[in-house]
Each structure stands twice: as structure tokens, then as C-alpha cells.
Length: 101
Image 1 (tube, rainbow, N blue to C red):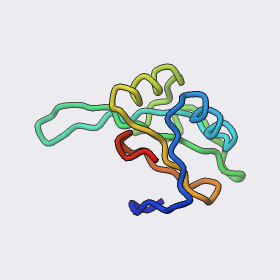
Image 2: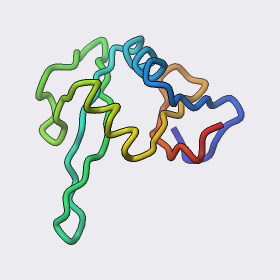
Image 3: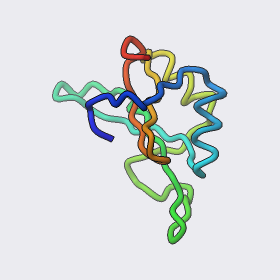
Image 4: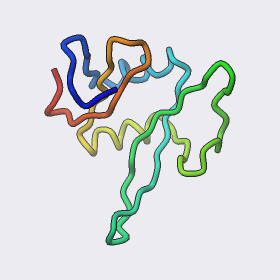
């Protein structure tokens, strides 16, 4: 999805809504640990989705750590993020909650 916000985009903040949207698309939560130029580590939230030709397998991507929904949603709240979904069925991005509809 692009950075420009479409009038048909919807922003999800409620945990249940986010989990349902991801589950409906056969996704799982994951966290990547990113280091900045000073060596400080921060969590970057990710979502992994299965494709028909390639199901999501634990540890499938080295830079991502699968995690529980509890841990993922706690980090989402800590970073004050929301999930913006687009009009197409799979387009999404994590945005600051201050940008919510």
C-alpha cells in the first residue's frame, strides 16, 4: 500500500478487529529486531501471510521472529500504532494512531 491515504482506507485499532482481519487472510504476527546506527535495538512489527503456493512456516524468514498475538498487540499499543487496510483485500500498513480515521 502506498503512503497516500485513500478515502476507502479503514484504520483498525481494536485488537479483535486486527486479529480477525489478519486471520481471515491466513496471517500470523511476527516481530523483527532492528538496530539503529547507534546499535540500539527496537521492535518492528510485521505480519506474515501464507500464499497458496507457499504456506507460512515457523522460522521461514530469518529476520522475523514469530510471536504470540498477546506480545504483538502489546507492542502495537506501546508504539501507539494502528493497522490501516486498503480497499483491495490484502493491502495494509502500520500507521501512527494519530493518523486514524
